[in-house]
Image 1: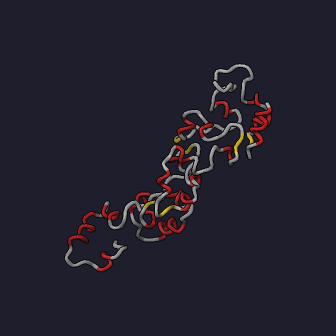
Image 2: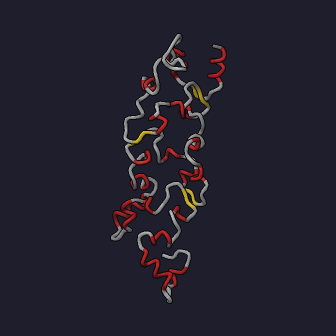
Length: 211
């Protein structure tokens, strides 16, 4: 018991259930679980916490029923009893290459994955906190206003910002998924090809902005 008390003192955040007594979660004599848990996860956690597996897209560790993939069950020096701070925790499973681009999306550069993604579950693709452009417009209201007020709008913009921009970062200015005019050629191949083949070229088409 002395070792347990010493362990808990080491953590900045202590699980409230632990403070109420070990038997809140553990069976003192025998159990079906190898950690003497009174019931299996995530059902055990759901006795106090709202279920995190009820929406369309559920984080893989939660689907596997193991909350302790990300959270320490007893104590932690980190917020929300995470085993590591974000984004280091996320990069234990996800590649960190998205953080090493020349042009980074500010939330990604700050390591704030939860600004755009729900850590547990969501009804939207990739566990986004909002659907599609609605998420982007939270930080870019000028783009939303432009779509509402301007007479002409670029068709891909109406469909999805991520048709042209990577939401984490790229090697291209403005986080474009490819450099201009290569990106433009995915929808306008004839116009971009004419730029290459024409003997007489329109001046602006030859500078770094091109299209």
